[in-house]
Image (cartoon, rainbow, N blue to C red; front, side):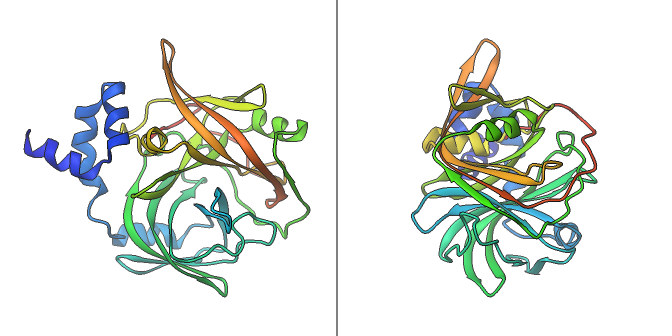
Length: 293
């Protein structure tokens, strides 16, 4: 085994490697493995985070169920305290499944600049969660390609009613079918959580017999999210609902299917939460394809 392959195998877990091989991109993924190390927040990442107003976080609620939630705040609410510690100055709203999230668990996050179409993924250990402050001990941090992000304007709302369920309702299906953006949360038993951005033309997520499905378009070939699903089928979706005034959060299971037409992810919701969060949007522009990892 070459030195490059050895380094790549050390950086990826078995599920990621299996998906890379099945997709025929193992060599390409091995070349990108160094981007996953070191687990430090560079000066460039710190500057990027300082200007952001939106971050998605994937973690577990008090019952152990996986959810993906939105964290919002003014520029500066994401504060890099050191190369390995990120402070998030915000409160997860009451009614959100991750309100009161407990420290001592693995979380995955993605900060997205919708206006400039940039994103950074940061995974690690949640070491503190109290008083409007979340502290994350960073274990992994890297950027993703920008061409799959729709330009949006995020404006925090004061919030509103919360509706919970165990299956999609007509209003939920309408949100899904109109969406051009969602966040996908997955979990690996040892490596921890991951939150990734998904984008496409409005309607790229389908609904069939109460389940969701979407095509997995070519991305950076790392297969972090789908690799996690190859090991654990837990999944959590967040539809930010830009332009609708409400968000849709789904928790359930997902699987990856390979066919003649390419990869498809199928998701079965087990719990749903709908709540108000945003005011309006600037509209969708940019690429209509969705970046996958």
